[in-house]
Image 1 (tube, helix red, strand yellow):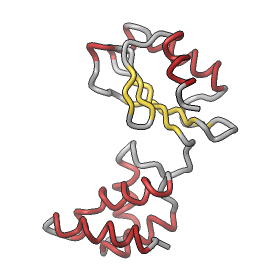
Image 2 (cartoon, helix red, strand yellow; image 1 turned 90 degrees about the vertical axis):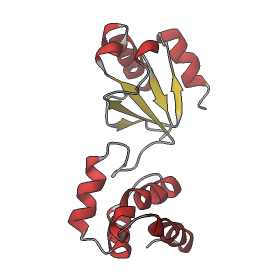
Image 3 (cartoon, one colour; image 1 turned 60 degrees about the vertical axis):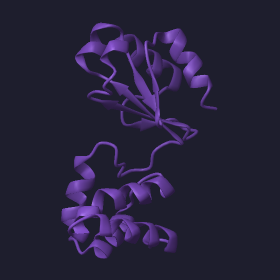
Image 4 (tube, one colour; image 1 turned 30 degrees about the vertical axis):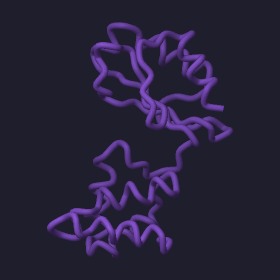
Length: 154
C-alpha cells in the first residue's frame, strides 16, 4: 500500500502532465526513492492511482534500467560498458569489482551494501572509464582509484 506521503507526492506531480498516466515515471521514482525498489504491490498501487493497467505500468518500469523491480543494495554501482570505457579499462574495473565485492552484474553483496549493474553509457567518455554510485559519477578510474571510491561508501 502506498503511504500517505507517497500518494501526496505523486498527486502533486499529476497536474504537470496532460494525462494522469503520463506521471507514471515520476510516480515510480517517488516510490523507489522512499523504498529502494518497486515491488509488485507498489506497482499495483501506482497503476491503480494513475488509472493504468498493471501490464501498462510494468512495461514502463521494466523498460527503464534505473527503475529497480527487485531489491537492491544500499548503494547501486552502475559500471559503464560503452566503447570508450571498454577501450581504456572497463575490463580491469569489472574484474576488480567482481573480486572485491564477490558479485557479478545483477547481484547484491551479502551485507546488502552494494548492487552491481551494467549501464550502456554515462556520458563521460572523455573521462573513461567511469562508474556511478548512487548519484555520484566517478571518472578516470583505475583499480586503485576504484578501491578508494568503494571505501568512501561505508
